[in-house]
Length: 222
Ligand code: SAM
Image (cartoon, rainbow, N blue to C red; front, side):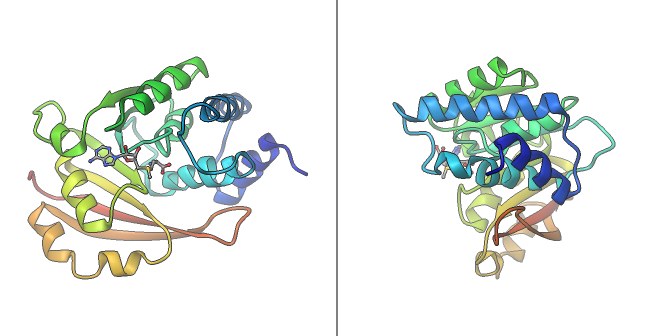
């Protein structure tokens, strides 16, 4: 049986991404804190034995969609227990990650725990995406808007695209069945100032699951 550290480092190799021993330790410490808190306070239904693959590696597939050459302002909409935002913050120390959720107890947990685990380039924000998008400091404000398991594609576009900068991207992380969600949404995406630019499909290391990253580029303010 492989340790969680081994699962994570080997999985990252399979994804073609690098991870340092310090980043590995921080993320495993985060999982430990999540497991302890989850016993009294429902944050995730995924069992501990699947945390590395279904929380960390799945979140980190988003790296395949992100530009690597510059620090980014990222927002994770509906972060829940911190995914994908906390693993992305750990792996992108020069970027700033906003962890947004409409449930206060989740926001408090993710920010406090990430900072305790040495992942300090993230902040928690308690709000709804559609409310945040009415605030001038957030609307058209992020290089990358990412989200996993929050809403079907059309609703997600309504919530996420207003938060992206012009020239920035939205990354919708989807599992199987994404095609039906996306079908017929071109006009909506266009009305919101976006264009579906790329689809990245990758196996999730250590599983037979396929992850789909739908990348939408924002071409004009909305
Ligand atoms: N993204 C995490 C993951 O993949 O593990 C959590 C997914 S959980 C199923 C959905 C989360 O989105 C919940 O924590 C919920 O509170 C949050 N949420 C739902 N609608 C939202 C909205 N309009 N704005 C902000 N957060 C929202």
